Amino acid sequence: MFVSPTLKRGKAFGDRLANMIIRPPKFGTPPQKTNVDFDTGSSDLVVPMSNCRGGCTGPLINSSKSTTFKGTRTFFSIKYQDESGANGTVATDAVTVAGLTVAKQAFGAVNVEFGGFSGPNAGLLGLGFPDNAVSNSKPFFTNLVESGGLASNLFSFFMSRGGVDGSELCLGCVNSEKFSGDIEYHSIDPSATGGVQLYWNIPSSGLSYERPGSTVTPATSLNATSITARATSFSAVIDSGTSLIYVSTAVADELYRQIPGSSRAPKSVGDGFYMFPCKSPIGTVSFNFGGKRYAINPRDFNLGAVARGSPNCMGGILGEDLGDDLAIVGDEFMKNWYSVFDYDRLAVGFAKAK
Image (tube, rainbow, N blue to C red):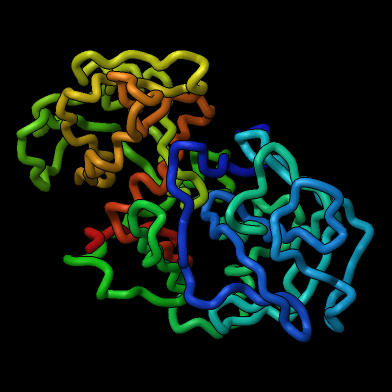
């Protein structure tokens, strides 16, 4: 299990999500607008308030202007795997996202943010499961499901590249214009977290690496690839709140061993990074879920030069031993695959993103 209650948010090399819903979330009565990261790797709604004493990014919410705000003296403190976090108290208020309202949604009304929590978005809305909520409150989407007001008890992500507009979160729906082919579902796996469902994590039998110039086919086995990284099984947390991908150091070492000229990056770059010659063509890395390979576009895998003028480029898969045989599979993967999180099936589905 994790020491921190939630998974890490995006790191410096990744793209932030942009324009995931057309309308910003609204808090209180009358409603006040703010913006949030939508994070499948955590379960709490975290919102900076107008009394923030440090580190907060606006728009901030002013509780005194809401007739439905209810504060408590219950201390709230959350710390993510990357050491960022926030402190405050638990509160409730009306929260509306894309026209869907929870009248008494509990959230962390924070007045201190630290460790790089602040960013382009003011707060964070966790889309994980109730047992991972440090506020001991039901997540926003769980409340929507229990209200019976959704057309379907699922949500889905389409992610654009390069920080441009076009990314989309569809609550209670699937947007068929954003993908091709059929959605293939994979059941989530609570056994990786002690039998308690915390994350949207699904079993994987490992990674594969296809040489440059090879054709990635919809093979049913890792053995069909021209080069196979160590097929050590793990449970992959599909995490919209993380930009990159984190696997165990053993799996990462084996993967980069297949890429000519690659090595671990200097510690000054950051923990867990690997690099390879920028001039070397990069093949295709894939995850294996349910006997099928799900490829990552090489342009998403290559994060660019280590530094200006460097001949070495950074790889988007990092090595970090998280425990419980867990890996974190973030936006770098999700840009390639339309992702559906089905609360009724308790499964994550993928289809090729357009």
